[in-house]
Length: 409
Image (cartoon, rainbow, N blue to C red; front, side, top):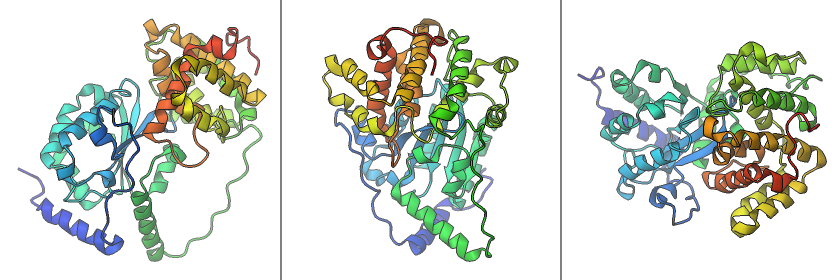
């Protein structure tokens, strides 16, 4: 028997009535995603419901699901939606990943049935659930909280602990790279209205002082010049784990990563050997790259990287060489050092299961991103291809082999 003898249809209707009062009658989802019609799931993917948005603060791949992008149910085959979700996750489930679910915009006209939700949960077997580290539910409502409680007896306790409710978008900033997050315009507007309503109801608050300037020893979130040493140390430590299966796919304990970051930012030595886990250095390396104010490959090359798909296949390696040779000297040297290491990792792919394609999937979004806005799922394809070429054809792109330890950034 359901532990909540409540009419969910009525609850959802009340919820939608409240939305209409607060937001006005919402129109269709925001602009559709431009997509090649040859995509195997074009009929679903064109709506932009599912997106890849870089990594969270601990190097875990970030995937978003936006309810406001769901078209009316009669216009979407929900079975195909489930298949497309699995198709997308299959590219990332071998590594740790995060899901962000934007609940706003789910209405009676576009919501999947409870039966579909149950079937979806059952179809997502252990390979999908094991490496899911957190499920963020943004803008939860009474409907979704009660629905969750109805399903709770059917959900494992371990999986249930991964759920985190997020009432306002700003709360996500503590957990992931918010600037890379793809947030639909409808969700942004809804969040603004919620925060405005909260501000009107809340008592006056004392202004908080601006954050202090970075310490002279700061390593994270500062320019490349200041944290080259940390990048090099992490690379050299990771060399010892070249044959570690799944290197760069796994995260480490969150508190441990915070402790290491704190040591670096205070200018204190970090002895990775005491952690006896190459994944710690691997996560720290990705974090260094992700928190640079400007990506290692600079903002300037973003458009050139996006155009790589239009370059004839036989000319792409030389085009990539032109792009990296245009980098400022400091960026070029560090990029050569890093990509040399990733090439070495790929040479051990029979053992570590991390070939150029896998490594590109992990590192692409940490090497280049746009100056403004977020990375879309479509923009990832040329970025990953570009990064894969840099790794697989390292010698042709960067010149003679130069192992880590012989390159001095």
